[in-house]
Image 1 (cartoon, helix red, strand yellow):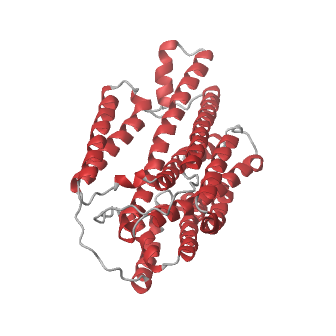
Image 2: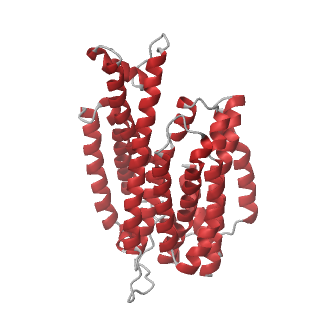
Image 3: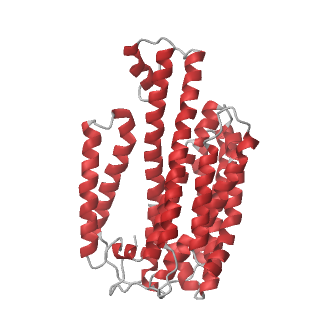
Length: 403
């Protein structure tokens, strides 16, 4: 709830403070770089804290940061005149219910089976609620999500970029620390440091992307950034669990540079294409799609990973002589869908688990890479220049309510 209230306002303020487009592009680039700084600092601090104080300690670090942010907010942020807005309660309830059912079904599908009545029911509920949400948003005077924005191909391309970069990157990279710690037996501190090349490059690339967007528009940095992310994920899938870190560190640099290039032009493209009174809605839509992409990426690519892991592990255990009727139970126990056995698993079984997990992670990385490569082509087509195109501003008579 705090993030939902915070993020749209932070980006909307830049629209009001920086009225010159080039200055605004640089400001959004710095905003994106500072936002990405959390990706760099978080793992570096989180790993040692987990080692020294346990996993719960990583939540307490937000307390002093939050207090400092409150003080700075009170002292330096400008006051923007408020406007009367209506809360789109039907849209809120329908979207929350539909997305909740969708994600729950995707998460439970690999464990329960895709034909399980609960999973099928979640899919049906999600389809109905999200369809009703779209109908409601097209009819209400002040929708929570202005669907007409997607009729502008530049806006559609920018929002698609934000959604799918989060889908591919967060969905695939969510599982990388599991391999580092579970298969390669790295300590949490070392696993946190492993992400430094990627996160550090993000911080450097985000302001650079702002300058590129200000000079050449969003198409070049967006397409290049998404393509680099696709190449990075594909390259990472070529390495086994025994690979030396520095042999695949180049893929993390590609991923970081690609992500850094995409953050800023998405925000700039959207804010330049909407009227000032709709900045809050546009900002909220960007960040909602990014968060949604990350959630769906973890769920969908997690389903791909779990399905391949279960299949590969079942085959491996069967080759080791486990009775056929015992394979499902062993697979469920070893993949976390059932209580583990009291006795530790023998070394050949543990090796089979590690091998199956790496194989499944490779498939998830390649699926994420293919998705991003397809997205790069679509974004290049949507954002292609047209000689007769004029700078478009959607003409909605009433300002839409911010999320």
